[in-house]
Length: 83
Length: 143
Image (tube, chains in turn yellow, blue):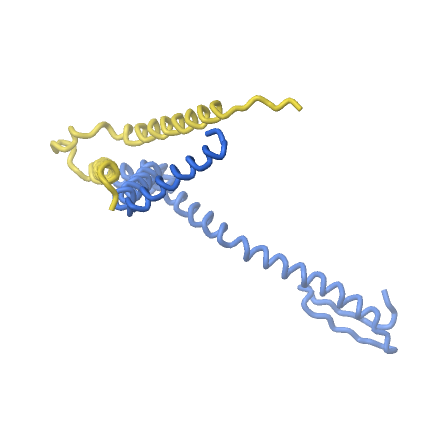
């Protein structure tokens, strides 16, 4: 079995994704069928944000990946050999 | 054109009826050759169509689902579905992406947590690396 930190990080990821899945599912699929004066609605942002926030998250992810690739490429640049 | 025989072709090129006279089969042979090439072409076309099928399947499937989604979201047929169903439908592509992302994250996390570490093998390997480095340093290789 994996030890200490590995287990913690792994289970952390599982827990986080379960939480995210549950919250998002309730937001997108269950809320429209709940009366608009129910108390649950106050825990969720307006519906537009259910598309805008993942969009922003995807952009940030792309930015991070691009930056990482850029940094690694910059670090590995070698001057051209002179024969 | 050969005078030795008469050839009747049917509209779909599937049959040739010939009257061969004077034992001169040249026209008939030419006709056969033509049919053979077009037959091979048809076979090639069918082979290409079959090798494309997996991709076509996926594209077809996805466009059917996409069309259904667009129909509900933009109300293209003027069906005027209940408001709740339309509210659920329009974020669907983003929702499916998020669910897929969550599933991937959970799978990676779970496999990291349950990975089989081999402590002794790791220690043994590190000892061997140390030994090899010492050996090479003695032989003059700069580390």
